[in-house]
Length: 137
Image (cartoon, rainbow, N blue to C red; front, side, top):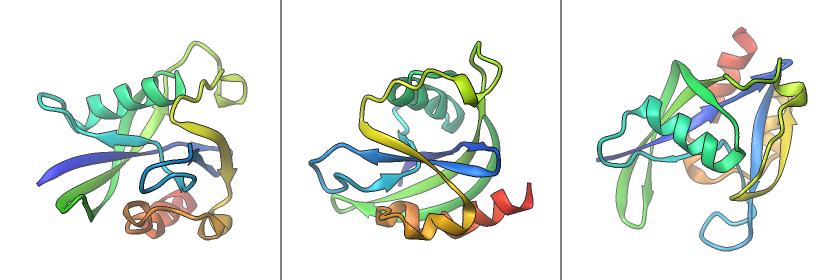
């Protein structure tokens, strides 16, 4: 089974969601940033690499929050949600210079608003546990 990671980035009690560019099977859906674990990578190193590629920012993996399972092109995948801890030179996410490469925009969603976003099935599988984790902070 192949692995993917989903980054749980919280700031001021809100969750970062990113809207995919048009095209592909999840085009224009909102998602937790992240991606596939490449050969030789750990979940933690994948999280750091993906966030640098997708947002242009430095993060390290924090706590493991939950797991979910989904199919992609007939292959079963395990999705692990990891807390993403900002490591950039700026003091906080308030002034971090986000550079989007795979997405058109971002949103900071309050836990009670997350269900209003059109998420791909992979993220829907884990989103309730992610929201409960955010509420527990």
